[in-house]
Amino acid sequence: MWYVMQVRVGSEERIAQQCNISIPKSILRKCFIPYNEARYKFHGEWVTLKRRIFLGYVFLDTDQINEVVPYLNRMADMTKVLGVGDEIVPLTDEEVEFLLQLGGEEQIVRLSEIMLDGSAVTVLNGPLKGKEGLIKKIDKHKRKIYLETDLFNRKQRIEIGFEFAVEKTERQKDAALATQSA
Image (cartoon, rainbow, N blue to C red; front, side, top):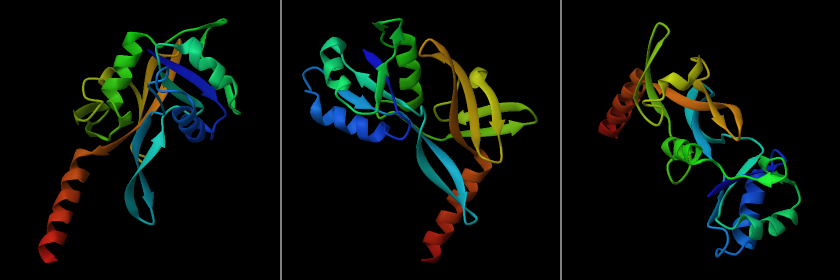
């Protein structure tokens, strides 16, 4: 089962690493942070970077959360494990399946390739294919799609990177030309 731990923003990497090192594998399968690929323009060039999707959250995969919690309570910057009231509650099967569809086992949401026709979005390939109904906003200039879905017992807005189908084709052509001239 997957659980979600709230932590101080900026400490996610350190806490995930600390969990994976200090908590026995017999009670914690893994501790991880979901990422997405996003396109950013630096000095006139588009580059792909990996960014955290849920700032301030770290995910735990365990069937023994009550044995894991004492280890978590010893960690600085850990706020709480999410639940309802005082009860720690795992993510639902639907939430886990949604996250796996987006990021796979490695929990990295790859860029989706899209085409825009006015306000209509067509996802040609990538993890957003078939999830067009969840898209709430598209920022064409920043190359970001904003999804809205139920996670952690509330509505979550998720920022996912994309690339235009035409750009990918042009990049592939440029790469092929560079290879031929080398």
